[in-house]
Image (cartoon, rainbow, N blue to C red; front, side, top):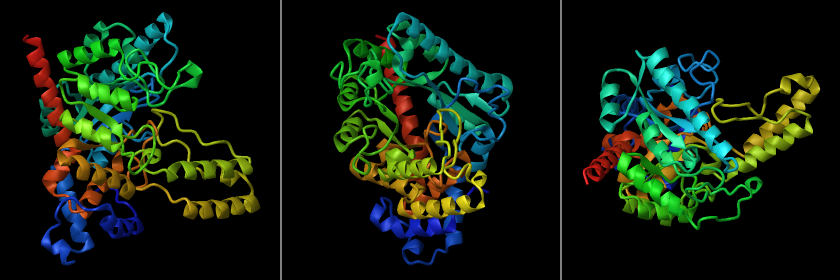
Length: 440
């Protein structure tokens, strides 16, 4: 029914659980060893079928929901409607992402145009192309209602507050179109907040606003009033701490992992996790290799060097364009002898720098749950924007995350919280804050 991780990976996952530290308490039959592998998988499948699953970050290209990138056809994208069905992924936040450019009036105008292109695409998917299969959720209640009807659920998030430029009124426009979270900044500082990744080519210094700007304070206040969740992924540590302090609604990190396990600027350290908890918020742990394991970068660089030695083009992976190339691609054109040499070197590097797996990913979930509690942790992929680990490399493999959680002793109610309960709670609390502010 669901695409399973390989048998060897499953065995490795099982033996690694003790180091990961199970949070829940496994049933007595699991502890005694009486539960067979088949029974464990069957139990996990039953959980997965009953639990509402939400992935809070899936990127889309500008030509999404056209004949070129048809979400109803299973192709090379990591998330499409057939793969969602196959993997038991009930809902996804489709992302209106616009990259940071120089802050000029012309570029602000273009960013708005680009944002509207992606809003139009998401609405076209749900309202024109596949209205019988997927529907846009505007409220937390909509998510449950749509899923109960048998349809898939589309929610909308904005990645990079740059799309509002300096025009606060655009927040209301985007909210009316369905935006229910906004990542305050992306790669490079903007007028709202400092980024965790300053861009030298944009003239960024290490910090510009020392966190959230005065304009950013207005943005957060207006987001609270309208009912748009404040997303603190991608922004600097100080900006994140500022946003947590300024928002009167819980904040989210839509796609981040833990710095304790992978020291990457995009991840959150324990101080940030505790600050997020204080708001009542949730961190949606992201299955992007470089954020899950520092070894992912070493592996990528090693394969890039190997390809360069053999005269092969670099592999490319662009936001919204699916899995991207595989490091083996093109080897069959090298000739028999060189291909054999390439494959031998490849296999050696594959052992030296093992791929990041769903087991490594769930280690981050464990760390956050143990530090800030099960109520404040969720799940995201960053599919079609760089995300994916072995075992969960597209939506069709979603079940493998649930399976790994079951292996570690998480109960069905806990798994339900991780997959959707926590983000829906924050969404509902955001709606309540918005209602109270609008009544003032």
